[in-house]
Image (tube, rainbow, N blue to C red; front, side, top):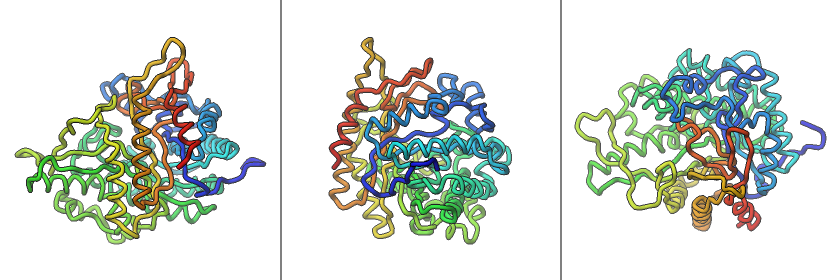
Length: 450
């Protein structure tokens, strides 16, 4: 830790801030010893990314991180959730530590603390080292063991300054889009057999939680889940059963296992090989007590019974009526209140305090001739969703923070640079940052507090 830097208390106040992910903003893909990730490989395959782009440069935050931390400070943020790039720390996912890589995060943490901002790093936000994918990726149990080793390395280097650890980001989304349907890296199309990738991620979470707690510091540990209220398309028994099956895969697989030590019954009924994947003692490891639960919310999901011959026990259908974001996602703020209150009602005393670790929207923002970006739709979105968090808090839900996705326009995975989620407009040809109207609005909102 640099001289004069002090650690930010974990729960000194409600956390207001923003979130990013390493592959989406850092760039510097071939610099300072970083190894290739599955996203480098995926982006190099024609047709995988909408605009044919990659995160090789992205926002160039690897070089421009002081500027980005100043944006957070000027916003009034007191917390920043970001991710560590596993291939930057361990280029092959195991073995020697890349000192240049860990040094980058060392400087980043000190820079945050110098600005009075709590560092909230996530260990894994989808950029698996390609060498581990070559050995089976998350379909291989050994990847969970390598992840625990990685967690130990990071804890030893950074654990004295971290305000909270996130183990995994959105293991459901990585399982579903990366391994079941192939729309994200590594591009596998295993459908329900992708359950193994979800289980091994959860096992990795449990092992990493143990490793983090064995390291220096006493920072809280959380799992970050993308959660969605699931709504049946009708009151029919078949649609209701389909909605429950989808809820089991999207939500309860990654909540019941951690908070109750068991998988939902629907998983065993749907996944023929689940019993062979889950070994004795796994759920005990997965069920390490959480200090916090990270909740990413974007929209509810509507489900109906599948047609004849479908390999899945559910079919997703659009939610008609609400306004939509640039991504085509319905804007349903009260779904966030429904979700948070529902978590409290379902898990009761077993539910740890919650941090809303992602909430945001994409719109086709443009830089006007006068150098401003009027993103009034985003202001309305954030205002309504912060209000939804307030309603949940008023109902007694213990919510400790709200972090906007995202600080910067960035590389949006398979959509490339076609979707802008940022509070800050990024010119990807120059890297220039321009705070949008929503940035100024959120700065004023943070200053008011609750």
